[in-house]
Length: 414
Image 1 (cartoon, rainbow, N blue to C red):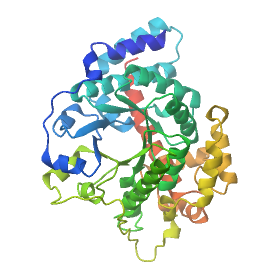
Image 2 (image 1 turned 135 degrees about the vertical axis):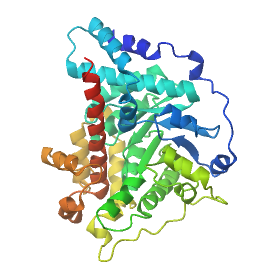
Image 3 (image 1 turned 120 degrees about the horizontal axis):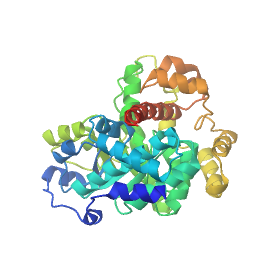
């Protein structure tokens, strides 16, 4: 069977002891201080050599994504494995289509690289689903199970925020698969995720929020990502207190070393090496929890929060909570992505999961990693599209672009 064959190929030569043992690592006093605030430390990189310079005993995990893994694949380090895998897969399943062949090889490379990180650092590793699965519940569940089977103790499966992702992650989490629910930007998005899916982790991609304001001249960008992140953290703390969700928050897309101190007490940081290096070179003199401290998020002169729906990042209306109550009571297996969209639209929150058209996707893709405000201004101001929803689809499409570069390299060897 193809699944078993690729499982064995991914684990070929992998030390069994790496699944449960951790190599001896040096401790660092500055990172120890951060840990004492209650924050877990993760590195946001797939580069083993780069991670080795920073990874100390205080770090617990590494995250990879479509962009970061593409960076590793483009180095050529897996070219031989691609050829070997293609031969093995075609032998087991001669009639496999090229699209499915590429998908299987991409899965193998993600798993293989994740295992290398596990073996080198004895850490947990987030492995991300292929972007082609973002709107496919059945295949997301199938590949999520396969990742989990390859490394049950170390792999955390990353599922993107889409209506299909909500359903598939709820099924996987219900089966005991550790889930890192990614591509969140707001407290309300993560409230929905945490209540409905109950994943181990949710995210706020704080850095991209600030870049949106700065690039579109809506403000300096300072504080807005932190404000959304802290609002989300407080909401999750309340859900954990009431027993409604176990989810913990990852502060993602960090941009500056100073954010380490500014967000002290957050559940988890996943820091790019640049951010971790900046903080380690200039650590804070003292640290204390900042969870209750909301920063200012100054806007440019003449710009109002309603101009782009800023409040959607930190407000969780009672009506939305009631809509989630209804959804939580439903059987996930009976739901469809369209039913998720319709449910929130009927509750008055259609801006949370807009029905994106092919034209919308094309526009987002042309915008690049950060949406062009002028293009979306009217729909943001009218409430047809939520600011958090726009940032979510933009981030997903940027990962789609990097996934394509990854897949194109694989195809070049077939």
